[in-house]
Length: 202
Image (cartoon, rainbow, N blue to C red; front, side, top):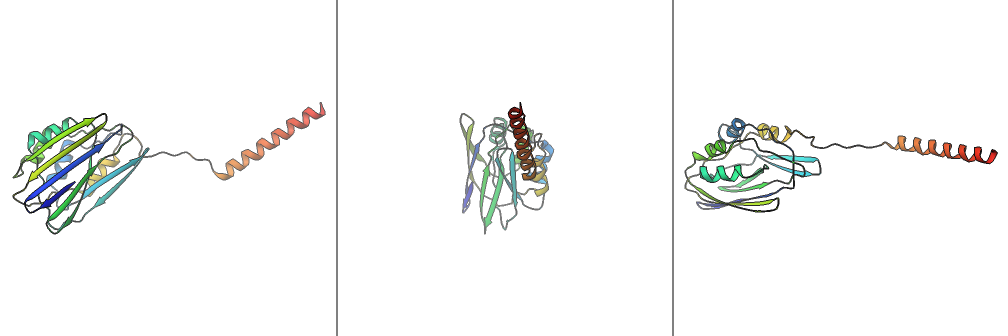
């Protein structure tokens, strides 16, 4: 989450992962998301079992820049095994950004640390990142002092593709219709009565 007061922005990223699907976004795609798009869009995804829900929101009026040093960003991404999905809301010049991930089966980010470093290296200010890990839970905190205010933008389509191009199904369900169950119940009853009748006759 990032909050801005004047020229100072504090961002906190939290990730809670148990295990995972695979995200197939290429380094080029990740770079394009952050640098070549003109329509701001921020995506968030939640997972329950094998079902993933992705939400995209666009609501930007004036977005302060969120920055990170190339080394910090590279280290932050290279040590992680799972993706985060960002969402941002704006009110005037204040932007709140939240990154959250909760995946129940086994993800992998394919964007290289070098690309992530390049994405952030053109920014005008530095971010200091810290990460703590306990089991499968990693908490990353970024603090940023901001002196300029261009916007961070992303393509909704590209973000959506990142989430949907997984190597495992988003969800799979198996169900038996009422009519099938009713038929089986009657069939089993007939078989049972037939067996009882044959025993009595014998």
